[in-house]
Image 1 (cartoon, helix red, strand yellow):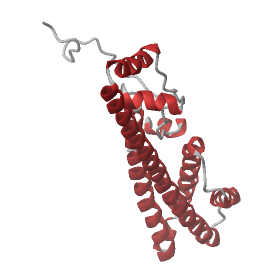
Image 2 (cartoon, one colour):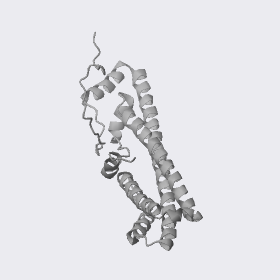
Image 3 (cartoon, helix red, strand yellow):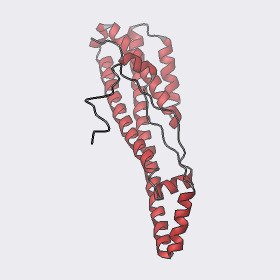
Image 4 (cartoon, one colour):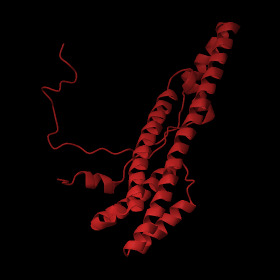
Length: 221
C-alpha cells in the first residue's frame, strides 16, 4: 500500500505558502447523540450513571484548573511587557538627552504604561505595538554608535533584549497552554460535554503582525 502522504513524489508547492492564525473563537457544541449517551448510561443502571457523573465533575475541575493556568501564563506575558515598557521608557529618556528622539515615541510608551491590563483579545495588539516602539528605539540607538559607550543606555538596551527573549518564551508557554485547552475541550465524551454545557470556546494563540512577516522576508545580510 502506498503512503497517503509521500514527501518524495509530491505534489509540492515550489512557490511556498504563507499561513496565518484565524482570529476566531469556536464554541464547543454537542449533538443529540451525546444526550442520548448520557440517558442510556442511567438506563443501564445507577452505577454507570453515577460513575459518568463523577467523570464529568473531574473533567470540569480539570478544565477549571487549565483555565486558571491560561490566566497565569497570560499574566506572565503582561508582567514582562510592563517591565519592558518601563525599560523602554527609561531608555527613551536617556536617548532624549543625547539626541533629538521622536517625541511620539515618548508619548506612545507613556500611553502603553498607563494601560497595561489588556484583555485576551487586546494583549496581542499591545505586544505588537510595544515591539514597534522598541524597534524605533533600536534604530535610533544604531544610528548613533557613540551612544553605545554610554553605560546606562547600553545597560537599558541589554535589559530590553533580555526581556524580549523572556516575552518570547512566555508567549510560547501561553500558546502551548492554549493548544492544550483547544484540544481538551473537544475530548468526547466527558470534557466536551462539560465544555459545551459551560459555553466554553477555543482560544486564540499569539500571532505576529503583518509588518513583522514582511520584515522576515527581507534580506538581512
